[in-house]
Image 1 (tube, rainbow, N blue to C red):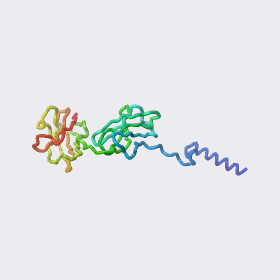
Image 2: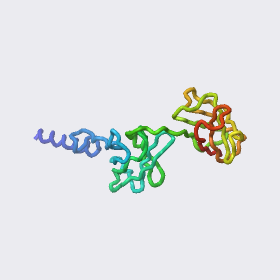
Image 3: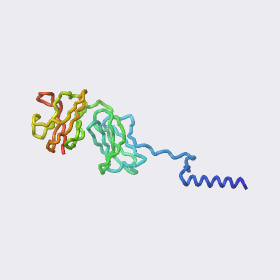
Image 4: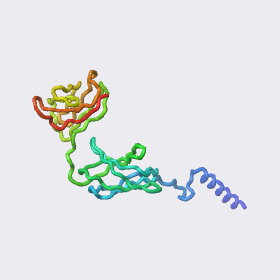
Length: 220
């Protein structure tokens, strides 16, 4: 009789633990594993034109109308995705871009994004063109012009040129600093400059042509 009482007591305790979640009913007392992480496969990358799959088993955010966004430097390439219920996988084709390690995001139909991770596009890298960040700035705000090819020199002339105007009519920004390796130029938008659309143009002192094509920027 005493043995039966002990067994019943143990069963009652186990039932309480299982109902409270302290012990998993189907895992021998081991907590259930975490949901599969969000990822993109193949994990070792692929060439342009080859298929890829995004997996989001845990949260199922790959709903209709979402896109994959491949970002590298200041450029991005958008790829439409094929989705289906229960929205835990989506398929696409690697875009026709140069080789490199791209950060991939999923852009949902409402414009929100979440990051998937790095994906290697195999093939010859394409020289990246200069870009400016942020692309929309306020007066007295700093901006950075980046040239991944490192074609700028610390002594170069940088100006903010309005539309349909020559380089000489451009405005020299405040506190200009060009990195020794020629990859970045950081400066502050002057307080008295008029708002509008401009281009950032860099020239060697006295040169008639820019070092590279002017880069657009908006000043508010």
